[in-house]
View 1: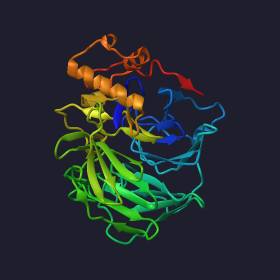
View 2: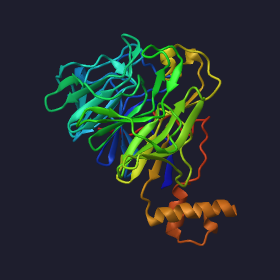
View 3: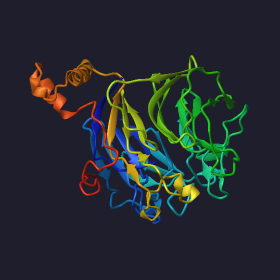
View 4: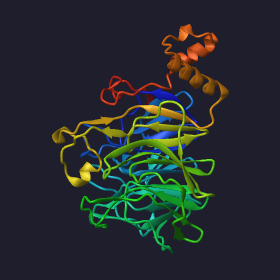
Length: 406
């Protein structure tokens, strides 16, 4: 595995949601320090062309029914079913939502599907994944009442009926900001933040390093016996699946005051954790980023790296790291893009090895190398060992110079 691309200038977002459709990654909403999240303006949509490595801002068509467009939010989830993306949950600074929205990537329009049954109460920080035409929602934080959740809901897309899933076994504890990942007919839960007095929130955070899975065919929760070294417990990390294995990237543990940029792999067949060490320079330690797999590449963008010490702010807002001026919070919200090549070509391997040798031999000028000119041009495009400055803005404001995809 090789980190092969490190670019700036994407959407500066934290706690947004993303879905890959074909070779495009659609991102929805999220938080950005200094922006008003009290109003109910339409959610923003950004699209990454993973082949051209180009970001676009998507503008809705003039005939879009804006009553069907979700308001700008954070803490929500988005899942894909064929060409449709379903967005659920999340909040702005004033309101939490439990309305289901559907974005059609062919027509580029929002609709608000009619649903039936036992609709989950509004929440944020939950997880969602799709298994066999059903969306499973687990955990999160319920604003009314102010409690952590450990319940499991299912939305059947064939009937559009919500139902509470009655399960067997011992479910994961109350938590939010965990990940739920589908492998075959199983939903794997890892990480998240709970409380020692859960379901109440008392700011005595509790973190879990165990992995659980729900076998949806038997509706039984299972905590498998683990081999290898488990990752340190965390929340606000990313999870993705490649070749049947679950990967975890980044995250945060408040009790240890640690942010992470490590990658850990869980093999469900052998039930073994292993730390993965790709070559190249990884993203800086962060949380609340997006992470999507397209073909054999992982795309990681956005997130935040708080700078310490941090002042006291209201409990629930603090969990979102809302960098409002009134709280005088010094944060770095990222606009960068990192690409991890899971199956690098011979050319990419060669380029990384050249950079390694340049570092070792302290060669600064690519022209001093005795290599083909075409490879020199490719090497000039990116430096896989570039060190990121997390305390300064690297580019002019993204919002000022951004192409529109309509």
